[in-house]
Image 1 (cartoon, rainbow, N blue to C red):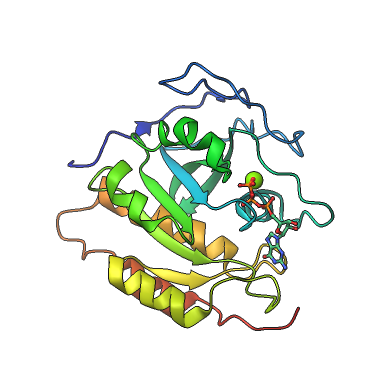
Image 2: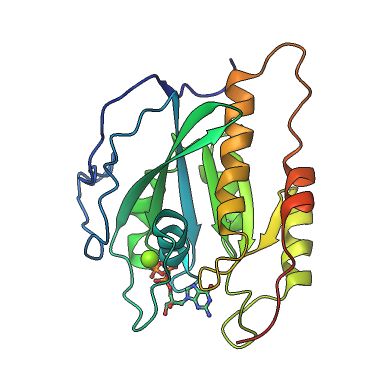
Amino acid sequence: MSRKKAAKGTRSCSGRTVKAAPSSGLVYPSRPAISCSCSGEFHDVTFKVMLVGDSGVGKTCLLVRFKDGAFLAGSFISTVGIDFRNKVLTVNTVKVKLQIWDTAGQERFRSVTHAYYRDAHGMIFLFAWLTEIHENAQQDVVIMLLGNKADSTHDRKVKREEGEKLAKEFGVPFMETSAKSGLNVELAFTAVARELKHRTMKEPDEPKFQLQEYIDKEKVAGCCRS
Ligand SMILES: Nc1nc2c(ncn2[C@@H]2O[C@H](COP(=O)(O)OP(=O)(O)OP(=O)(O)O)[C@@H](O)[C@H]2O)c(=O)[nH]1
Ligand SMILES: [Mg+2]
């Protein structure tokens, strides 16, 4: 397998303790725990996926929507440093654990969060940081671009067409999401899990998983109500 090694067959629970950044030795607790990521659920394979993007684009909300099915309304509490949650998905009978890292978008944390990119298997970008993908990520990392806040014309900063253009330029898949309504949130993470699982556990005669095709088939078009 050409991929970076994924941890296989563990039953252990990694807990919610945030690891120190490899280069800085710092530990950054984030907003108070909403639920414990320690499910202890059995899984066959684990992948590390990063959520990256400017402050306020909705990374934490997207993760909470995916993990807990809820929307964090109310005042915006910016993430401090980095945090992670685990979620186990079933992909063709294989239990895939995604360890999803929620990075802080604020400039002052970038050196800390960059340290975590290196061993990531997947990266989900919520606009704006695409140039950094190629500087910091491994060659074979799975990348996806999301335009979040598709529920609102007021809050979203980038139009769908701009997102599509940007994604085309960088050759990465793109879709619109909304942490608020839940639009395409499950799909975004599932698509990354499927691609990673396929790359890692591909049968010799199995056709290549087409990530963009899968997204195009499954995604729901965004709407513009606020
Ligand atoms: N309308 C709308 N608002 C959203 C959506 N996702 C997030 N928000 C709001 O956007 C603000 C920022 O959301 P966060 O998820 O905390 O942003 P973040 O990207 O984690 O920001 P940092 O932690 O600073 O990097 C909050 O006020 C959310 O309520 C969405 O899909 N639709
Ligand atoms: Mg955040």
